[in-house]
Image (cartoon, rainbow over all chains, first blue to last red; front, side):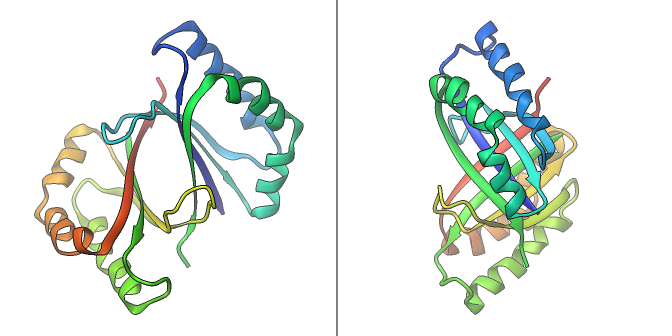
Length: 97
Length: 97
């Protein structure tokens, strides 16, 4: 299992319609084959500047790679993520052997 | 639900007995009252410098605060975390309302 997470901050004001629209549009990621346990989360620690997070799990590296290359993912990244995300950090976790 | 996560890198060489001992000692955190879904994880994204992660969930803020103040937690932080962790980032997630 690979748990892919990304913490991020948007360019939009908190609570704005643009923020709401971005989060709604991101739900398309949950329907990409291989994506399991998709979550949209609020980041609440004061020890970093991120406002939100997405978390999803893949059975293995092949499923993760297929997600990365899927046209629904690349389109979301190009059309929404790049222009609307101010900063982000990807962290991926796998069970400790 | 609050999911408390911390990604980190140790001062110890990868695969060393010191690394193994640190991770074994950290299992004490799982037994602190209020800690649910405790996980020790390997960080595998090349997009950051962290090697490991811990993830745990709390029912609410009171449970999280009790964990932070618990002597088993404060002792682990003082005796193991501070001297043996080279860098870390805490990220906390809550379900998006």
